[in-house]
Amino acid sequence: MARPPHHASQPDPGRAVYAISVAADLAGIGVQTLRLYERHGLITPERSDGGTRRYSGDDLARLRRITALVAEGVNLAGIGRILDLEDANAALHAANRRLRDRGSE
Image 1 (cartoon, rainbow, N blue to C red):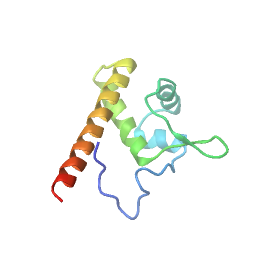
Image 2 (cartoon, helix red, strand yellow):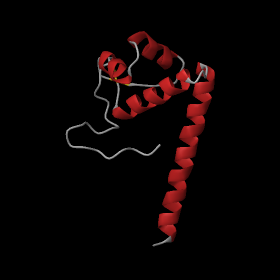
Image 3 (tube, rainbow, N blue to C red):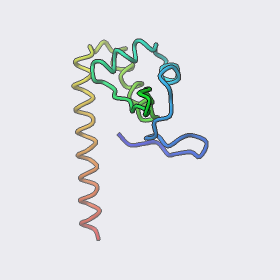
Image 4 (cartoon, rainbow, N blue to C red):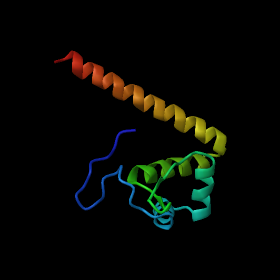
């Protein structure tokens, strides 16, 4: 998935800075729902040295995608498979882009 442009007032989308309660609030879900998604392997937050969950802007985008799929009636196992396929597709697109760029040098 392509990242939106980074703005100086926002943290880097890949940097895990949000606590679980903030991430849940920003994603419009409950903390327990976020923990459920984590248990099902749909989201994997970084952990601080003390073990506290930290979420990034990329994690928030993934949570919004999960929420949209839930709203469409997809079960959690299906969501996991969809996300895996979307991630694989994005990786293939990135690899193709790198190959094209290398070929045009």
